[in-house]
Amino acid sequence: MTETLYGCDEAEARPWLDRFDARTRIVTALALVVAALVVRSPFVLMAGLAGLLALAWFCGLHWKNIAGRLLHAEGFLLVLLILLPLTVPGPAALSLGPVEPSAPGLDRALKICLRVNFSALAVLILLAGMEPVRFGHALAGLGVPDKLAHLLLFAARWVALIKEEGLRLHDAMRARAFKASTSLHTFRTLGFFCGQLLVRALERAERIDEAMRCRGFAGRFVLAAEERPGRSDALFAAGAASAILAAVALDQLT
Image (tube, rainbow, N blue to C red; front, side, top):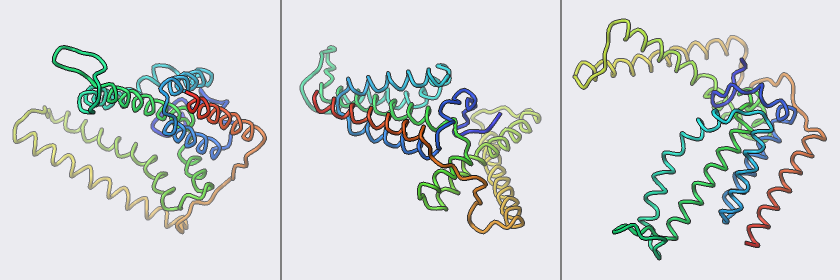
């Protein structure tokens, strides 16, 4: 299975999006995130969220995968939903005995939740199924500094390898009958685990650096094939721009 951004393994489930230039998808995702920050009406945000869910269904993404990835952010949003209505001053929205959540705090928490979910879903649909190499080349084509593009490429590639190293160390600890507890031995063992993981990561980074130098790496990856936007990219960008402008206009009317 082709490795993709964020560990997503559903690249084969979105062939319709893979026909577009990677730069078109990145700019569209960025425009959607900016639009979510500009729109103030919760009804427009909910309509946009419903549109993204329809796009996810059209692309063939599984609902369980989407819900599982959005669930990572819902815990923080739940804290906001509880604290903001209790800390932001203003008239009470409802009375729950001694607790009276404020209407401005509840409205602000609702907008934040909708914006975060909208932005996360837009990025998940448009970018999560993209190969890291293609993503890095697209960033370079958009004028992003080479060092930042390289940093993102290396992060997307080697975080998974460091995770594999950690799993091997964990398996070795289990083979030696290690059981976590609150004892001093457990804390010392976990400290050795973190230190050994850092040492192995450093050794692997040195080997990678030597291998790249042997292959003539001079600070920039050579693009094997550069993508060129076509008519379908223009139509997709025009459709996304029309939807964003319509959402902003509707927000101004409401």
